[in-house]
Length: 227
Ligand code: ADE
Image (cartoon, rainbow, N blue to C red; front, side):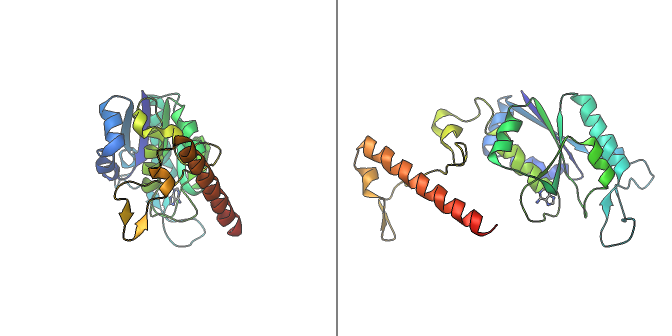
């Protein structure tokens, strides 16, 4: 079973999303397990503080090294083989490839920070740093949740054949999915492409292939024009 751990100040953030849809089904079926570890439980001072002001001045507060590193060590004590990942906007970009990599592991531990970030010395205790994208979230939790969702749906047996991940966007060399249509045949004056109603499976397959290639090219051009 795939075993994820989340180090966080806000374990309640994860309860309702993981109780919905595919993640909840995977957890109920014993295909995945997610345990939250409260970082504040590892605070050592009488105020149980987990953050402090930056040396050299400046705005905001940083996650203190002692409680965070103690929480990471507890996560490694529980699962010695776990891959510890810090969520931070300065990390490696999260992609479908990373999700596939993590889904092949026995365990990941996701470290979520609040405030303006982490004391730099915490980095020595993690195996990787990961970013959800080039924007700043108010904490690592929404990023960790996205990682959990993307990874859990890739675990063997989690998706039924009708939902199979094999044909998803991004799974084949960055090739995007084709456009999908369901009933009604005409919605607000816009029709479903005729070929999909033709019953000609060869023609449908060819149309899907050419649509996904066109989309992938358009996406690539959009990405390149912004870089
Ligand atoms: N924490 C704050 N912003 C983040 C981001 N974009 N990715 C991962 N963790 C974050």
